[in-house]
Amino acid sequence: MMTAPAPMPAAYDSGDTAWLLAATAMVLLMTPGLAFFYGGMVRTRHVLMMIKMSFAALAFGTLVWWVIGYTLAFGPDVGGAGLIGNLDHVFMKGIQLNTLTGAIPTYIYSTFQMGFAIITVALISGSIADRATMRGWLVFVVLWLLIVYIPLAHWVFDKQGWIVKHLGALDFAGGLPVELNSGVAGLAVALVLRAPRDFARREERPSNIPLVVIGVGLLWFGWFGFNSGSALTTQGTASAAFLNTQLGAAGAMVTWPLVEKWRTGSVTTMGVVSSAVAGMVAITPACGEINTLGAVVTGLVVGAVSAYAITLKFRFGVDDTLDVVGVHGVGGLIGLVMVGLFATARISGKEGLFYGGGWGLLGKQCVAIVSVIAFSFVLTWIIAKVVDLTVGFRAKEEYAIVPGEEAERAYDFQTAERLGALVSGRRVASDDELVKQISRLLRDRESEK
Image (cartoon, rainbow, N blue to C red; front, side, top):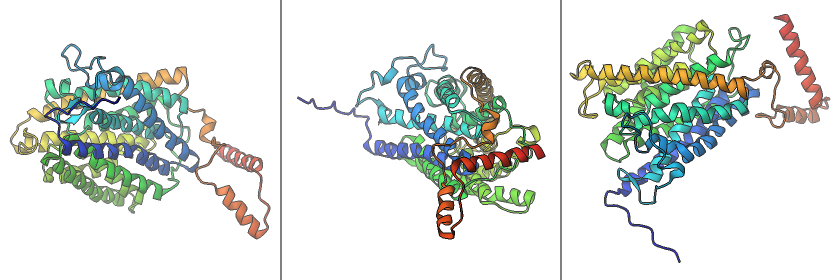
């Protein structure tokens, strides 16, 4: 005989719950969007690998969060220092259907935060596109979430975390644990996996720009849930975060193309869509803390700075392949600083430097930034190095030259060629002959260099 579910506590709010259900679905959609975004940016033979890396993060991140991630990030604080949660809720133990986080069932709040964890580790794959093994990536995803992301989530998102409770820094929707963290981690992993020999002179051409645009569209849609959902309510703060997200993206889409035009003489589609991502990255920590003027300024600043920052990898010889450091790392840093400058008491309850608050909040923001950079970089470098020395993380050099996707291809050009041959009567080489021809051409090119 079925028993009736326990009644919801008086604090339960059905409207806020409905909004967070929608926002959670939007956040989870961001990872498939990222798969398209990254897949279109790489060369044809690496499209499927990038898509698989994002979906691997989606699967393994979900399981890690369910087993132990939630309790370490949001369980009762250990020792009162705000560093990590305890193990009371392993496998979501003790969480019932009517257990609330604020006015929202904990089940959906946990799933919302799970989406943050998944997209953060998936972002890192862009720094090592075309030179990581899948087995190394899978091990890295699990270790990095446990050792780096989850403690940072406790520091920032949990009310007992040391950054929000003891330090008093502001981060509305994840500029520290998501954006800055992924950028710094991307730099550390890129250094461990090293740039290929031809990095400085290799021309990286995206394989499918329309796929990139589709990916950005999905990310943009999901970002409204990411930022507005972080208000955990349907009240005014969510509305402010929603509008500021759009304004930040728009501002960056003005200055990035201007810098690109000044540097190269043309404005590219890749630059336009990348600028939108940079704007939304920077506004993430600030969207619920600053007014609309601050949001526009944030977008304008990050568009110009990130457009220049992504070129520095060539100067320093760091193969941050898809510009995770220049967009997410630099963008997250700028957004966190903007909170210290533009925070207004009318929205956040605290005032930044430009609204009479003095240097106090800006100083706290800088302490939080330095702490996360140091924590993320050192531990990520160690994890990547251990993974590389044990199961192997960096793909063999020849994998970057010879296609490794024998079972399936992102684009079946060979079938199209054979259909054309049937019409024209031409002879088409077999699969083995094509592989030999490609290998011979690549060897000839290498010998010429």
